[in-house]
Length: 171
Image (tube, rainbow, N blue to C red; front, side, top):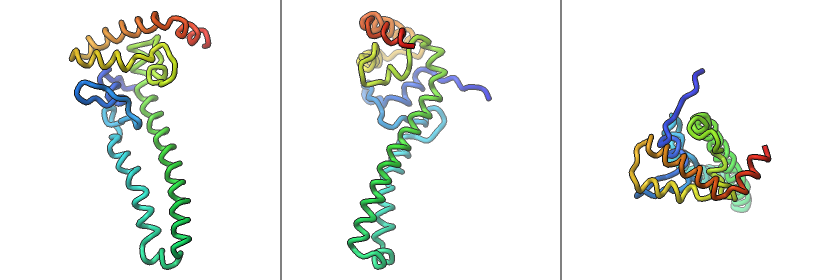
């Protein structure tokens, strides 16, 4: 099976929500640009789960069998299971998106790990979002954006040389 190659704009649109030339990191990555389910449908599914649970437990037939105390306990227990399931499904969704776009990212930026760019911790690329927002305001095409991002990654590596060297020597 041939590996799909995605454009830089496509990859970034799966990871960041762009509104008024400002990028914001998505909590649930969007699979729609790479041929999957859109994040709005995943969110709608997540929101519907507690409602479906409520309808299932508090409908007249089941409620009469359980009683108020057991119905409330069941709702709380199953709601906690739903929260765990949502966390797991979000992890699976985000991992799938990362696996799909990683080969294309590595072709464009072989020395830059995508996980480090997305990390909220201390990495050489901690200022990536600021840099990306600056580039968004310039309204660049894909090639220009790629060139500018390579320059910015190089600048971030030089600026955070100690962290970059520690992380590259770790491997």
